[in-house]
Length: 64
Image (cartoon, rainbow, N blue to C red; front, side, top):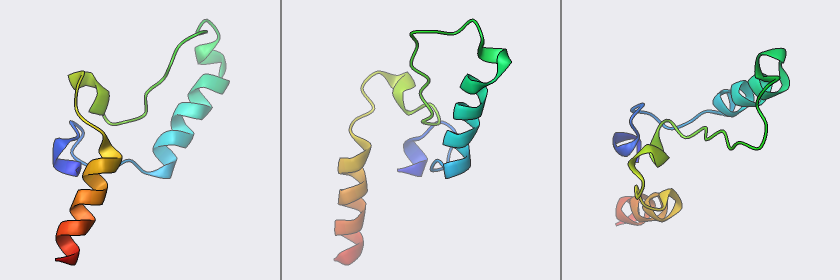
């Protein structure tokens, strides 16, 4: 999955926390009614597919 993410890695909890802190800060005071995707660019391709399905497939392949 990480190879398909433009950032080249899986997201970490602190990535989500950073987005939340930004939205709660005064730097985001003029932002409203928006969605902030914290996905490393996954949705930038429009139809990147369902990450949870790919995740399940990876584990199924690893299990043999």
